[in-house]
Structures are given as structure tokens and as C-alpha cells.
Length: 382
Image (cartoon, rainbow, N blue to C red; front, top):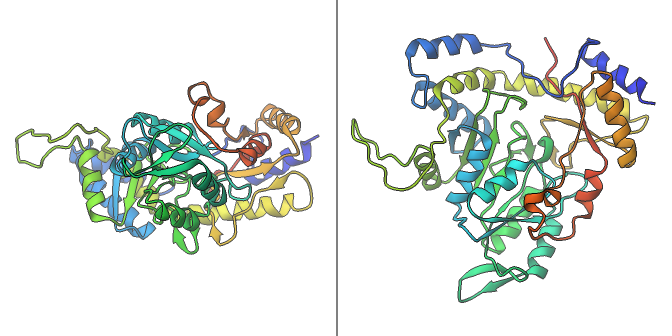
């Protein structure tokens, strides 16, 4: 049933062997920088490559500051704490997301509150967000905080995610949150290189967080980063991600409970070499997406293209199948043919640990969860 599509995908990667979903490419100075880092003996959390990577990332995204972390999840956790999220609070986010988004909220002792997504962006819906805030929240004058009327818990932040690198309507989301005095942390883990209205994702809210896991557009094995334009947030982010140690030539004094979320210099060396190639990677991924879009324009299933006013990085290309049955048949056929595909994530509110979390109507999230499949999206070999 899907044989023609399978052969077309294989033809894009020039092999009949196993085709992964998204594998890294190391075509630049990775080995050179790694050896230089090893020779320097600064392989842990202090070293020139960490500083260099932070400067390069800030320059690329247009943010004033970048703070490297050990992974994206730790970056989100730290950003939520910086935003003032405390135990017993709620954070608005989307149910259609990777588990790290919800888990980072839980690390704060807070509860995720799930709001629906838009079908075209697969990211948090500004309309659903406003409806939820108008209908389900109230301002408690005694507490001086926004409160969920159903749970009685304070809502202290909003955490939208740019799904598969496609920007959500982040300008509207930030505007709405400003009305309610809610800090916005962008989960930009998947969207390095993606623009909304010619501005990089992660730079609209108070903070944005990226991931450099092995399957991301660029990778340093693990790794993440917080970006912000706020100098005080940047200073605090660096402090609490480096164990809150007060700088001193030899003494060990820490002034609060914090986290060992520092990116090692060894990883940063790899990240610098990868970031030098990011423009080339983005060109390659866009060409692949355009090829997919042209192919699927004449037949089912539907290929998901970048939203209006956006330039997506096309980190993971995605298709919309007719229904769950066709989705499952497609997954079976492609994976049996050594073409790796996967469904979109199980909705967070369907997982055991979050099934009691508050949520609004999730009709778009449920519709997408039944139909969306990712197809191979690696930067193709040069």
C-alpha cells in the first residue's frame, strides 16, 4: 500500500539500508576541537569552548545572552525556577509535546495545565490559551496571583513549545500572557534555526531553551542552552546552573540550593564545530522538505509545511494520515522496510503520571495524535 512512498524516501538518502529518523552529521572541525579540548585538559564545566559556544549561540539567535546547560530539560527546569515557579503552582503548557516539557514543570513541584494546540503549527494555540484564561482563571487579590478556578492553584508561567521546529503563534501567546502578567518560557528545544516574523524562536518570551541532543539539528551528544535578553535573568541562570558557587580563587561558598547543570567543555567543543555548520544543515533540511512537499502535493498523506509568517528549520518532517488505522499501517510498513518512522507523542494527559493534571478541551491535540507521523529528516550526506 505504501511501497511507492517507501521507495521515494529511500531514494532521497541513496541507500536501501536502514534509514534513521534523524542522525547527526560531523562534517566540520569536530575532531580538531575535541582534540584541542583534550589537550587543554579542561574537559569539564570550565573552559574556553563553553564561553565560545555561548557567544556564538547568542549571536546566531539574536539574543543578548546564552547560558549553556547539560541538556534541554535542565534548561527548562532552571528557566521555570527563574520565572518564579514554585511547588504547588501550575504552569500552562501543551499536552502534545515531548515528555521533558511536562517533567521540567514537575521538577519544580508544580503541575502542568494542558491547553490545546493549533492544527497548522501543532504548537500551543493562542485562541485556546485566551479562552482558558478567560473562562477558567481568576485573579486572587489576597494572594496577588492568577488562580485556576477549578483547582485553586496559582498559575505562574506559560511554556509553549515549537513542535518539530514549526513556530507556534508566539507573538499572540506572549501578548496574552503579558495581559495576565504571566512569564513566558519558550520550549525551543526543536527549533534552532526557526524564525517567526523574521525573529528567532526563543527570543519572544522571557527566556527560550534549546536542546542539542543527538537527534537535533546540531548536537554535542547532549547539551542545552537558555537564551534571554534580560541581563539579570542571564546572571541568575548562570549562577543557579553552576551550583550557585560564589566566584573565588580557592574557596567553596554556595549561597543557595542550586543545580549542577553545567555543559562540559568537551561537549561545548563539539557544539562549536556543529554550530559553524548550522547554515549548511538548514539549507539541506529545507531542500529535503521541499522535495517531500512536492512529492506529497499530488497524493496522500498530507505533508506538514511551515506555518504562515514562519521559516521552519524542518527538524523533523511530518505527515498527516487519514486516521489512526492508516497511521498504524504506515508505521508498520515503513519500519518493516527499514525506513524509520514514528508517531507523534502520546498526549501528556494520557500518561499515568499526568492523567489527573488539569486541562481544557484538547480536540486538536487528540486529532493530531491520531494522525501525525514523522519521516526521515537527516541532513543528507555531502
